[in-house]
Amino acid sequence: MPSWTRPFPPLGRTARLANGLLAVGPVAVGLVAVGLLGLPSRAAEAQAPGPPTDRRIDPGAAPVSTAAQAAMVAIPAGTYPIGDPQGRRSARPAHDVTLTGFAIDRTEVTNAAFAEYLNALDLDVQRPFAATEAGPNNFADETRSQLLEDGPAQAPYPIVALDDPEARIGYRDGAFRAADGYADHPVAETTWRGARDYCRWRGARLPTEAEWEAAARGQQARRYPWGAAAPSDARVYAGYPSGQTAPVGSRPKGATPRGLQDMAGSLAEWTASLVRPYPYKADDGRNDPTAAGPRITRGGDYVFDTAPDQLTTYFRDGFSRAPRDGHRHIGFRCARDSG
Image (cartoon, rainbow, N blue to C red; front, side):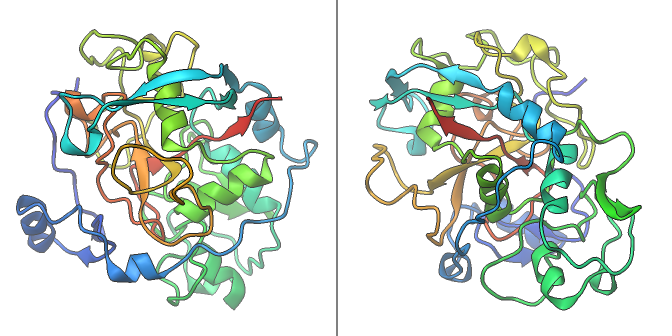
């Protein structure tokens, strides 16, 4: 049972910081303690994600992704409250936004679904590997730069960090596959570009942060996706060790009234929006899919952002959101325009 206090997780190979730099052990702890995590890195700002993929889903070859697309939840057009007057500075000022209708995934994208996307790409895998064990010798040069975070620095940046200890996708029998027991867990270690391109391949897109908040909060201005009751282990998967994810939808009591799952806890979620202050302005370039810069994540997570105020529908100060990196605690869900 989680304590509902913010734990400091095991650091693993490195601690990724929100400014895109890497620190190890006590250095990372020290930077957390002095509050430097919100500063954007010049290196991160300078690297753009490149153009989106032009590929589209093949329903016959991607049954998990096809089913997710069919199960998207409709969110009606209307005016929605955004931010909170009592929230953190980033959530102020509270204001309303008017949105056209859209649909959004019922759950976070899974390892099985993201493996289908990798199998649809022209990737040159030269040797099979188990999840967490990918390395330079497994891929041809061009593929290496797409799948390894520790590969050569270049733009566009990778789509996923399969060389990270928290990755749960391997390659065997001629295909990318989720690790045993993790097919229905949310995919971690995707970069922002990987999340953007998966959704585009599916005929969808990443939700803007205003759409994400509207879907989680509703027009009733719910504090949490389910309502006003405090978070509990029955509602939220949070406060667990790094790498110990849970299947999507494992906390049905935490669903929104429309049935969206895991919009608090589980993994934080990439949105389409750059980190920009409120009030939210859809036409100020913050949703440009080719722009460089850190992107907003939403929903808290199971490792870092686990305190009650970090699980609210309006929390937007997610830990470690450098877009070119894969992150153990960040996943995503897709959206699409209605009609």
